[in-house]
Length: 233
Image 1 (spheres, rainbow, N blue to C red):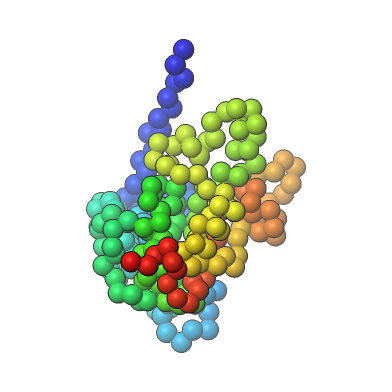
Image 2: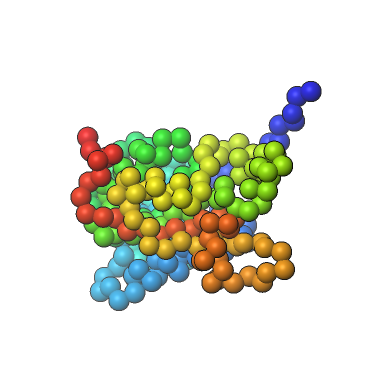
């Protein structure tokens, strides 16, 4: 007997901001809050590159003179929408060389991206190249260590995050930190979007201290000085 293949009809590309679910909006808000803290006290606008920017939802959350957003996106439909909110948007493969100068950006966003990329090392090398030393990288990925995913594995069931046909890689908090450290990024903050623990009320404190058990990981990192060995040509 062959196992049935479950294929979702959800379009992975968001061509409009209205396409984002309420859960996705919660994660976007948390990432935007982290960037606002990075920008706080700076004299000029924060130069931000949104990697896999989709339709430019972050540009609506971070509108105003404090931020100048650029984007890079594979899907041309989404990029056309993003140009309404971003200063510029490049359309290309995220693992090829990006059309941006070295050390141009103060901050990078990689939200719901790394689970879709086979050659994540190429992407992270480009991120290390265009980010200024001491700059901020915010990563959001589904958590393969989510307690409900672990429970499924214990009962020999397929994890939810690896059922989605466009997810090619699973991430845990520990694996993510190691992979990013190899590319010159040091984690300074981690939280999850939600824990969904039975009988436990939602709490930002819990979402930070039990991040590795949460549904989706949100990790803030800082770029160290120098070019990591893994990215030297």
